[in-house]
Length: 262
Image 1: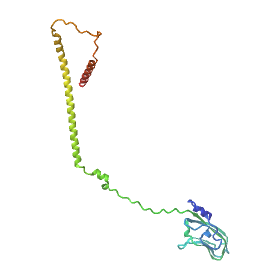
Image 2 (image 1 turned 60 degrees about the horizontal axis):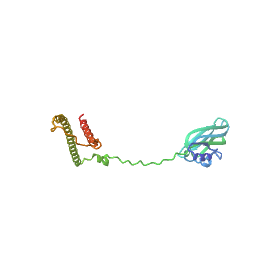
Image 3 (image 1 turned 180 degrees about the vertical axis):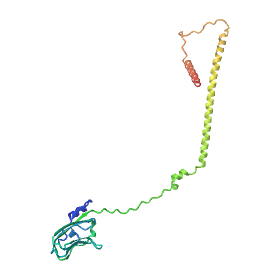
């Protein structure tokens, strides 16, 4: 019972053996009271060990059979010792069997035939208990809805026919851009013309200045000598700073104009 209890609490197999099931007679049941373990699922018989003494005269025929019935019919285990022509003696055997579920092991017995008897019988079963794996309930496979690209809103929007009004709006925007580009070209052309004109005026002034100055120096001042009549307070004439600033601005302007053509 202790081995069985330990088996129930562990997933590893437990190996053990029963007490002498033939202690109460030549037949027995495979119940918990006889085996010492409950005949439940997971309990498998792995072998039969028996021992007895045959009492007989040498010339007499005598057989001894250790057997277990199969609830489904026939025998699960059956082994016979033939003592015919032999003297009686004590025999011990250990017979392994493939792991066989306890449900296939019915009532056990010691059967004899001929002249003789069996004394001090002992029948022991070896077993293995392995806790059954828990059953996994069947799961319903998930429902998978097939994907239809033609029903996808994003695909429909991407493949929808473009509104003709959008093309018209694009044409209007394109015309506006062309008009703005033309206006910019005109403004640049006007600026270019202004710069050319300014440059021409500078060249004209440069050409005119020598002639004008020559005529000025060549002119005759009538009347002879002119006496100085201006009296300066303090004897100094202050520089006209505004004139200097104006001249500096004119010079800067001329440099900026000339830089356009370098």
